[in-house]
Image (cartoon, rainbow, N blue to C red; front, top):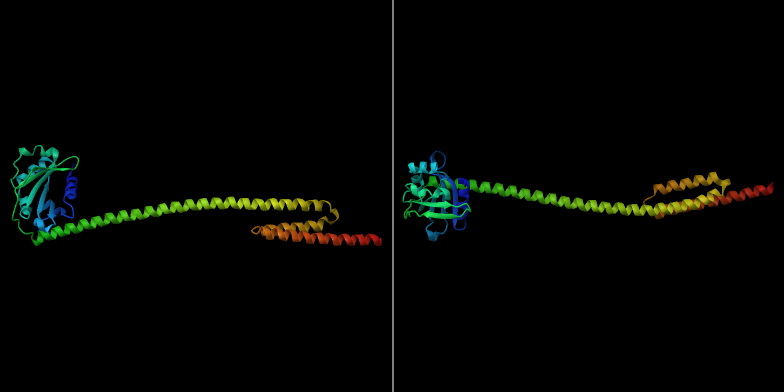
Length: 270
């Protein structure tokens, strides 16, 4: 258990709307700041007289002994507080009776489950000094810094949420597009399969006429190939393609009839 975890536990306990908690606050800003308090909680309800509690966090025996040897640090802040608490891990609290703890200090133990137990209650300072402008400036600075840090965290999480939502939406759209494309491909395959079948039927019929008309093979073949080219150029509209092909075939049939009549006439003359 470290000091940041203990401070987090205190922040959760002394939270709005009743409390405002400030972590690592100096006794002033700039050249006026020479000492720091680990935690400061101010009650926001007027009915409590805006009770103020100071916290000094210690996580090891050596830290605790060092603090007890020099009480000047606590005096710089204690005068502004109604209560003053030493906050330690529960394992260290078990040894706390061995040390000479000032009467004006209380002792809080933080358990492994992050709950708080008051081991010793402090004497209450009924008439704390008003917070001076230097200490107030340090409190306000710490409050602004914390708000900025919180805003950065929220902004980062918001951007992550937006990016995640965009990515999820992109995946959904890509999936829908792939499904639509697959359906379109299958529909196109079916559509053109029918066209090919119809063309093959016509080719088969034209082929029979062609084989039985050796005399007019060359001219008919040219017209038939022209019809096939037209069909390939207009494959998007099956009805038009087939109509053009049939029209070309009708023209070819008329040409064949005219040629046949002409030859028969020549045969009679001879």
